[in-house]
Image: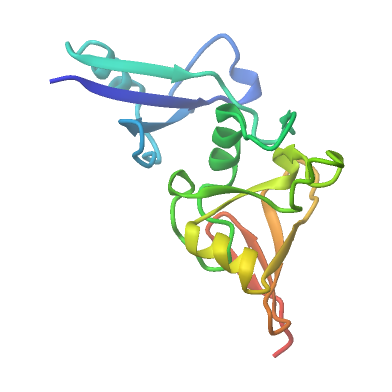
Length: 177
Protein backbone atom coordinates (compact mmCIF):
# COMPACT_ATOMS: atom_id res chain seq x y z
CA UNK A 1 0.00 0.00 0.00
CA UNK A 2 1.41 3.37 -1.03
CA UNK A 3 0.73 6.37 1.17
CA UNK A 4 1.51 10.00 0.34
CA UNK A 5 2.11 12.55 3.07
CA UNK A 6 2.79 16.26 2.54
CA UNK A 7 4.37 18.18 5.41
CA UNK A 8 4.38 21.94 5.89
CA UNK A 9 6.96 22.72 8.56
CA UNK A 10 6.48 26.01 10.42
CA UNK A 11 9.73 27.32 11.81
CA UNK A 12 10.36 30.31 14.01
CA UNK A 13 12.92 32.63 12.39
CA UNK A 14 15.40 31.80 15.18
CA UNK A 15 15.26 28.08 14.35
CA UNK A 16 17.01 28.16 10.99
CA UNK A 17 19.49 25.33 10.87
CA UNK A 18 18.02 23.15 13.61
CA UNK A 19 14.75 21.64 14.78
CA UNK A 20 13.59 21.17 18.33
CA UNK A 21 10.40 20.24 20.16
CA UNK A 22 9.02 23.79 19.87
CA UNK A 23 8.60 23.43 16.11
CA UNK A 24 5.42 22.11 14.55
CA UNK A 25 4.13 20.87 11.23
CA UNK A 26 0.86 20.57 9.35
CA UNK A 27 0.40 17.30 7.50
CA UNK A 28 -1.78 16.25 4.57
CA UNK A 29 -2.40 12.57 3.85
CA UNK A 30 -2.98 12.42 0.10
CA UNK A 31 -3.51 15.24 -2.37
CA UNK A 32 -6.87 16.63 -1.24
CA UNK A 33 -7.03 16.07 2.49
CA UNK A 34 -7.06 18.80 5.07
CA UNK A 35 -4.04 19.31 7.31
CA UNK A 36 -3.66 18.06 10.85
CA UNK A 37 -2.92 20.72 13.45
CA UNK A 38 0.21 19.47 15.20
CA UNK A 39 2.58 16.60 14.55
CA UNK A 40 5.48 15.50 16.74
CA UNK A 41 8.95 15.12 15.24
CA UNK A 42 8.90 11.43 16.23
CA UNK A 43 5.79 10.86 14.07
CA UNK A 44 7.47 12.41 11.03
CA UNK A 45 10.54 10.21 11.64
CA UNK A 46 8.27 7.14 11.74
CA UNK A 47 6.63 8.03 8.44
CA UNK A 48 10.02 8.52 6.78
CA UNK A 49 11.07 5.03 7.90
CA UNK A 50 7.85 3.28 6.79
CA UNK A 51 8.17 1.32 3.51
CA UNK A 52 5.68 2.43 0.85
CA UNK A 53 5.29 5.92 2.30
CA UNK A 54 6.22 8.96 0.24
CA UNK A 55 6.90 12.05 2.34
CA UNK A 56 7.05 15.46 0.64
CA UNK A 57 8.37 18.34 2.73
CA UNK A 58 7.11 21.63 1.30
CA UNK A 59 9.51 24.59 1.52
CA UNK A 60 8.67 27.09 4.23
CA UNK A 61 6.16 29.67 3.04
CA UNK A 62 6.19 32.92 5.00
CA UNK A 63 2.51 33.77 5.41
CA UNK A 64 3.35 37.41 6.18
CA UNK A 65 5.01 37.97 2.81
CA UNK A 66 3.16 39.07 -0.31
CA UNK A 67 3.58 36.66 -3.23
CA UNK A 68 2.52 37.81 -6.70
CA UNK A 69 1.96 36.29 -10.12
CA UNK A 70 1.42 37.66 -13.60
CA UNK A 71 -2.03 37.03 -15.05
CA UNK A 72 -5.20 35.57 -13.57
CA UNK A 73 -4.01 32.01 -12.81
CA UNK A 74 -2.94 31.48 -9.21
CA UNK A 75 0.26 29.41 -8.83
CA UNK A 76 0.19 26.49 -6.37
CA UNK A 77 2.72 28.18 -4.06
CA UNK A 78 0.46 31.26 -3.73
CA UNK A 79 -2.62 29.07 -3.12
CA UNK A 80 -0.73 27.14 -0.41
CA UNK A 81 0.37 30.39 1.22
CA UNK A 82 -3.23 31.71 1.33
CA UNK A 83 -4.56 28.43 2.73
CA UNK A 84 -1.83 28.20 5.38
CA UNK A 85 -2.30 31.86 6.31
CA UNK A 86 -6.09 31.80 6.74
CA UNK A 87 -6.81 28.17 7.69
CA UNK A 88 -10.53 28.37 6.86
CA UNK A 89 -12.94 30.07 4.46
CA UNK A 90 -12.68 33.85 5.06
CA UNK A 91 -16.49 34.34 5.12
CA UNK A 92 -18.07 35.29 8.48
CA UNK A 93 -18.64 32.28 10.76
CA UNK A 94 -17.58 29.73 8.11
CA UNK A 95 -15.38 26.88 9.33
CA UNK A 96 -14.74 25.04 6.05
CA UNK A 97 -11.01 24.22 5.89
CA UNK A 98 -9.08 26.42 3.48
CA UNK A 99 -7.87 23.28 1.67
CA UNK A 100 -11.46 22.76 0.44
CA UNK A 101 -11.99 26.30 -0.92
CA UNK A 102 -11.60 28.40 -4.03
CA UNK A 103 -8.95 31.12 -4.01
CA UNK A 104 -10.83 34.36 -4.65
CA UNK A 105 -9.55 37.63 -6.11
CA UNK A 106 -10.97 40.11 -3.56
CA UNK A 107 -10.78 42.93 -6.09
CA UNK A 108 -11.68 41.28 -9.42
CA UNK A 109 -8.80 40.68 -11.80
CA UNK A 110 -8.80 43.03 -14.80
CA UNK A 111 -6.74 41.69 -17.73
CA UNK A 112 -6.68 45.14 -19.37
CA UNK A 113 -5.42 46.84 -16.19
CA UNK A 114 -3.33 44.29 -14.24
CA UNK A 115 -2.77 46.79 -11.42
CA UNK A 116 -6.50 46.39 -10.66
CA UNK A 117 -7.27 43.09 -8.99
CA UNK A 118 -3.73 41.71 -9.05
CA UNK A 119 -2.99 38.04 -8.51
CA UNK A 120 -1.26 38.68 -5.22
CA UNK A 121 -1.61 37.19 -1.76
CA UNK A 122 -2.62 40.69 -0.61
CA UNK A 123 -5.64 40.43 -2.94
CA UNK A 124 -6.54 36.75 -2.49
CA UNK A 125 -8.57 34.86 0.11
CA UNK A 126 -9.96 31.34 0.50
CA UNK A 127 -13.73 31.14 0.03
CA UNK A 128 -15.75 27.93 0.01
CA UNK A 129 -17.88 27.56 -3.12
CA UNK A 130 -21.11 28.67 -1.38
CA UNK A 131 -19.56 31.85 -0.02
CA UNK A 132 -17.64 32.52 -3.23
CA UNK A 133 -21.00 32.54 -5.01
CA UNK A 134 -22.54 34.76 -2.30
CA UNK A 135 -19.72 37.26 -2.81
CA UNK A 136 -20.02 37.12 -6.58
CA UNK A 137 -23.81 37.18 -6.98
CA UNK A 138 -25.53 38.17 -3.72
CA UNK A 139 -24.13 41.58 -2.79
CA UNK A 140 -21.60 40.54 -0.15
CA UNK A 141 -18.34 42.53 -0.32
CA UNK A 142 -15.09 42.41 1.59
CA UNK A 143 -11.74 44.07 1.78
CA UNK A 144 -8.48 43.11 3.47
CA UNK A 145 -7.68 44.89 6.74
CA UNK A 146 -4.02 45.84 6.63
CA UNK A 147 -2.46 45.07 10.00
CA UNK A 148 1.32 45.10 10.28
CA UNK A 149 2.65 41.51 10.08
CA UNK A 150 -0.89 40.09 10.41
CA UNK A 151 -2.38 39.38 6.98
CA UNK A 152 -5.60 37.41 6.67
CA UNK A 153 -7.96 39.91 8.34
CA UNK A 154 -11.05 40.95 6.35
CA UNK A 155 -13.87 43.46 6.71
CA UNK A 156 -17.10 42.06 5.27
CA UNK A 157 -20.31 43.95 4.43
CA UNK A 158 -23.57 42.05 3.94
CA UNK A 159 -26.24 43.09 1.42
CA UNK A 160 -28.21 44.45 4.43
CA UNK A 161 -25.38 46.67 5.67
CA UNK A 162 -24.06 44.45 8.47
CA UNK A 163 -20.29 44.54 9.04
CA UNK A 164 -18.05 41.67 10.15
CA UNK A 165 -14.33 41.37 10.85
CA UNK A 166 -12.96 37.89 10.16
CA UNK A 167 -9.59 36.30 10.85
CA UNK A 168 -9.08 32.54 10.72
CA UNK A 169 -11.72 30.85 12.88
CA UNK A 170 -12.80 34.17 14.43
CA UNK A 171 -15.67 36.47 13.42
CA UNK A 172 -16.57 39.73 15.11
CA UNK A 173 -19.97 41.29 14.35
CA UNK A 174 -19.29 45.02 14.08
CA UNK A 175 -22.89 45.97 13.37
CA UNK A 176 -24.41 48.35 15.93
CA UNK A 177 -26.90 46.51 18.20
